[in-house]
Length: 307
Ligand SMILES: Nc1nc2c(ncn2[C@@H]2O[C@H](COP(=O)(O)OP(=O)(O)OP(=O)(O)O)[C@@H](O)[C@H]2O)c(=O)[nH]1
Ligand SMILES: [Mg+2]
Image (cartoon, rainbow, N blue to C red; front, side, top):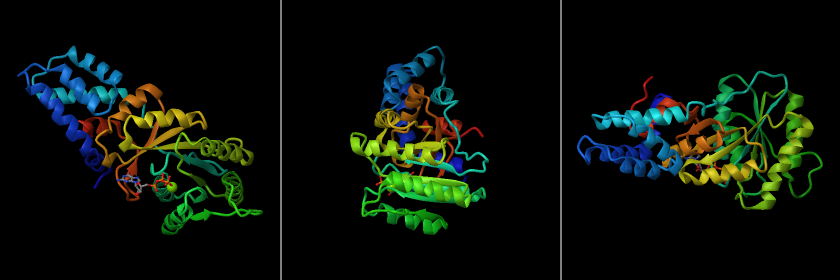
């Protein structure tokens, strides 16, 4: 199965809702479109009121003979809004270790996303190691080690001089130092899932980021926020809160296969312009790749991609 067909399949829950309601907006009044109904459909698809209004205003200036034409125009409008949203995951060529800090609320998909991105790095011939800095949740280190063993990746879980309690910043520092000494290409730093309203844990994330700078002033080279696609518009609030603690360089949107609210990406990008590095549509290692904007926009309203 190709990535584009996976993405399209993954978007089924979202597209069923949008396609049907947009088709309904057309057929209700014969050849006249009820833009009020189109607006309601877009809002239900979680695109946000402003973006839904803008799309409707654009559509109102056009004539539609069939529901298909209307769907195509909605997809074009979405695609245009996302035209600069996709910044595919990339590790630039460098002699020093490229350090990637992963952040996100509990259960958003951080650890799984690390495994998926690691697979992409390994496929490109890069060496990868992980730092198990989620010392908060019982079992988190074990979970990372299981994934690590499956992918043949070394996981740093301890550091010299460690006391009874593992300090995430100290572990991150030591892991970064060791990875650099070994000439490892990429180091992923897994962090504890935090409720964004948990102030001490949010501060700890900031500390992990600043400690990495002591090893390499450019580190973390990427800070990726993993957003759970099933929470829809709430993800926007998460992004705003995390941005206050660490500079987020890109987003990973997981679980697009489990949500009817994938449209939230459209409104969120319009407001924040934070690039989307990858999207996830399943639990398997190859269920993640770059956001193909054409396939996403068309898939969201039930249309096949154009390429
Ligand atoms: N359907 C689906 N499930 C996913 C996807 N990504 C992750 N999951 C599942 O979501 C659950 C949580 O994923 P984790 O990677 O453990 O999330 P986490 O952010 O590391 O969680 P904590 O460490 O508890 O904060 C797991 O059951 C994953 O298999 C996805 O794209 N689609
Ligand atoms: Mg985790």
